[in-house]
Amino acid sequence: MAIEQKFPLPPFTEESAREKVQLAEDAWNSQDPEKVSKAYTVDTEWRNRAQFVNGREEVVAFLTDKWQKEKNYKLKKELWAFTDSRIAVRFEYEYQNSQGQWFRAYGNENWEFDQHGLMRKRYASINDLPIAANERRL
Image 1 (cartoon, one colour):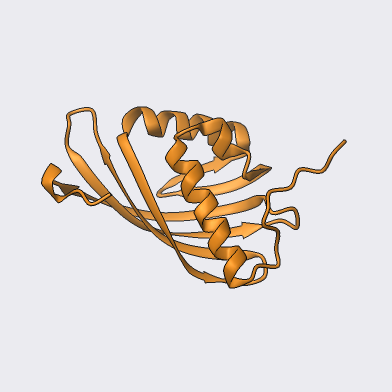
Image 2: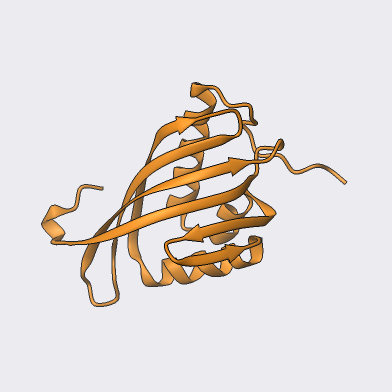
């Protein structure tokens, strides 16, 4: 059986950490829960706001529900800091709810990776700000 790997692998350099962040941004902007879930270990642990998600199956269910509720989703991530196997990012994303109200969400994520480049832990703190359509910037 082949070992799953998701490049770049730790230990991270500034260049490889930036690449990892960009790959995550691209995957999340695809809004494909299955594709996104492949970046995480099968037993990944998340805290997303006040919700706890464990394992890839729950990741897929969480993201499916998220993108059904958050229409016209667009995300931008920025590397904040990194160590050998950890990356911290700041991000913002915009979306529209089912009533047509636009929001910009701001937050920070702390990521921990295994030796194969799969994210085993993801801790996200997020705040939403209602915005007018003409205030969108993503």
